[in-house]
Image 1: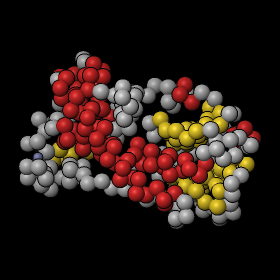
Image 2 (image 1 turned 90 degrees about the vertical axis):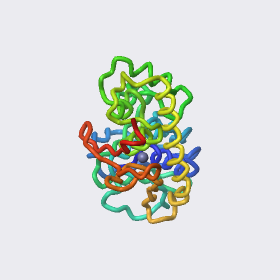
Image 3 (image 1 turned 30 degrees about the vertical axis):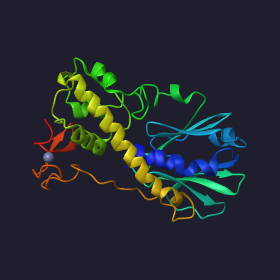
Length: 270
Ligand SMILES: [Zn+2]
């Protein structure tokens, strides 16, 4: 599933091809995404110039004077650039044709992705309740500590809550708790301030590294096989149950927490 680093990589991959370009035509081949694609978006976007290409949480925000395209990649979605006339496959649900002769294509085999057009995207119900961006300066240990007071939920579930902070998916939660040396079962409300400082730094560090790893795939957004590759960074605990911790040699343990698998080292994480 595309996580925040993959979405940011997608943003960087498509931006040079679509920024300042004029949308000449929008083709929606299948409106049945996670939410049905609204009628009339084709007409509203025709002739609009792309003014900016941003990201909020895992949403791509493509701004035009007539509204902002809010794209979510869902479980299996991807965006990439092809030439006009490139044959569409059965999972290529939306094309944004540009005056430049290129096309921004949205592919999504399982159709859990979505496409909305909004005049005020940050006030859109999908985005309005989201917590801060983890890489923004406002996201700090101080913030997490304050937000966590009185919360009985485990610290792992706490940081995976998008109303607390966006973009910390299961892999990144496990990895950042390892890096910060925090046991994932610890109660959020009973975790000390200095540990939240370490955790906020770890989250930024892990996501930053993943985005940098994604930089190696940027050229794949055009001219490849239309499937920008996802990248793997070296993981310390995630998906390593029964393997040795690279720091202390203890066997990595796994258990289910909030219906998600959690991986940790019981020696390194207290
Ligand atoms: Zn260890």
